[in-house]
Image 1 (cartoon, rainbow, N blue to C red):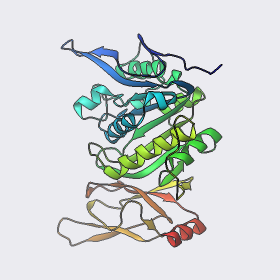
Image 2 (image 1 turned 45 degrees about the horizontal axis):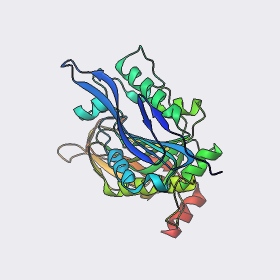
Image 3 (image 1 turned 180 degrees about the vertical axis):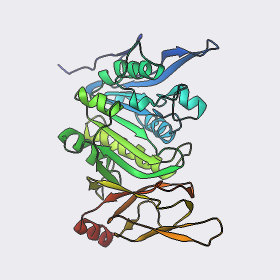
Length: 329
């Protein structure tokens, strides 16, 4: 007898095997009494398998993931799917409407998990997402960008020491994979406590679409789904993700106007000049040097810097790995 898939039950909705359905989970009402709901799309395959959640815009101004999820959903059909895909493209609905990272009370949703049904608005939203999405999933991929006035090179942050998480990170095959500890109150921490492997994809900047970052994200998710045997494998990976365990920031030693001399994804040597900080008249200049051998994985987009500001984020490379990458390039 052939195995059959089970219905997916979220809130008051039931999505039958072989069906795709859009859901609206009520969150709260605005002072105008307008109902705000959490939009979710469920694709329930015809055959049993893993349940993968995709989430984006936990920080409301990080919109690359919204487009990544939209494109993924157009390529997944329920009749060819094993298991289920639960997609939440706009988790922080309030921040998304306001084009803000935060909720109306300035709380960070990604520091509010696992949440509480009687806490702050952020805590209640986190609790709803954990109860209705995370607890019903076997795997998760959370999509982010850099914060305001910063940009990130496409990268996966995850617990690479966990075998199942590492397997998914290898399948995603972002240009860079970072062994990353979890932060208190984060979605990744809350999911990990439930034994759910989670990848966090970081790429691009807030309130901007980055076509390359979006393409890498879409292809990475589809490869993860193929590795989980949720859908057929369509592409062969020709290069492997660079794996690192430590990152370091290059900071401004003085305030001024920054002139950057390197780009995201560029390999830099220890003490290599990364840029110059000039005063407003150009009379004084200070070099910004790399603190280590590594790859530039994040940078500020604002040339106006204060003393101590983080300017460039660098993934540290062992000497032999740096030479290998440069040789391949």
